[in-house]
Length: 227
Image 1 (cartoon, rainbow, N blue to C red):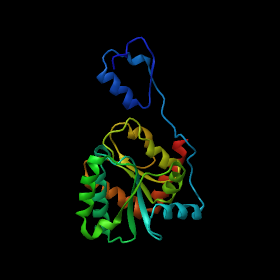
Image 2: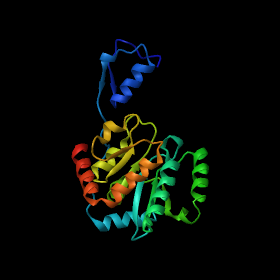
Image 3: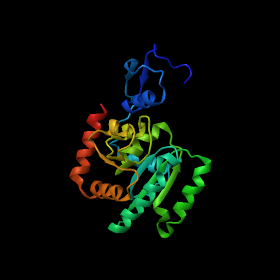
């Protein structure tokens, strides 16, 4: 922060990030910060070709014939993945759903993955419902988003939240946190939840899974808003 001063102009990727800088860097001039939201670095759009989706599913060992919930992020503590996994399992238990899996994509922090793996192993007979696919090639991401029933992103902090926007562009309905910058990205095109309240996430899963009209509306709103 030593180079930040009151005379220079700055760009912020979200209003939340702007407010963070105003809060933590007293030398900055708030009037000289312009918010310019991000966009995706490659072309993201809904993949309609079922064969392409199935090819990518097979590449990442996602079982054929199963619906899946998708989350894509670095596997690290602030992404709140143990919260997401445990409440996904509670959701399928309550509703007696057997053909639904949770696909976790992304690289991992070495010191966190052991904790995540322990949590998954503690799920006993449900642990096979959680599928870690590791790093995802850029060209495969639109197909994985497009093939998913729901994208979930319960992070506790993001300066922007790029995976939310990627999912929206691909027509995948989103459930994300109501924290930090994420409400700016999702707007009214999905469901925002408190990332500390299990019941809110479970109810969001139920609404997206069982109410097709709401899920379809969220998908369409996401595509339109992402533009």
